[in-house]
Amino acid sequence: MRFSLPALAASLIAFVFIAAPASAEQVGEIGVDWLGNDIVIEAVHDPKVEGVTCHVTYFDRGVIDRLQKGNWFEDPSNSSISCRQTGPIVIGDIDLGEDGEEVFKQRQSLIWKSVVVKRIYDEKNDTLIYLSHARQVQDGSAKMAISTVPLYGQEAVWKEKE
Image (cartoon, rainbow, N blue to C red; front, side):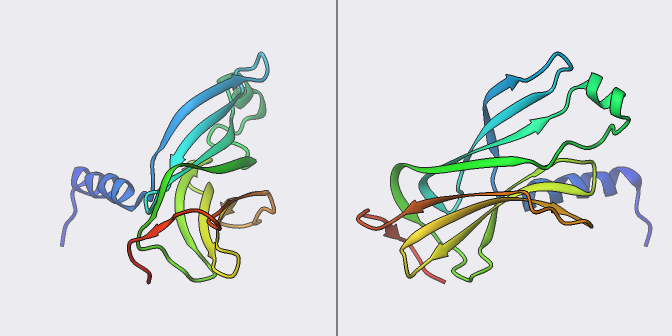
């Protein structure tokens, strides 16, 4: 079976867009130095939990910084997250296991590193936990941030439970 390069590229692009859990909308960009380095702020709407928005920040290296350091294809994996109720909460078919489920992923390098947001449901405390962390092929990172959305006292509607 032969594959053409354009067909392979189209398949890869389709896979990336289909496999993407959620998209982010850039809502801010703060310049931090004269090298063009920025802190980017994005709003991520949980695709399976209506009424919850997470704001994720990460570092975006400028061209001058990339030239100086010689590392063209990688940004630092530092990130921060804050999630809040921004409307009526309607919970869809979410993963209730303790590993949770990936809500968002932003590449920080060409291949090896991503910033990931996972959602975990803490049933005992009736709380949604959002964890932002770096995922690397090797040399795993301990850089992480956490935010919670308590459901106690809220009129959260569950569409389905797994």
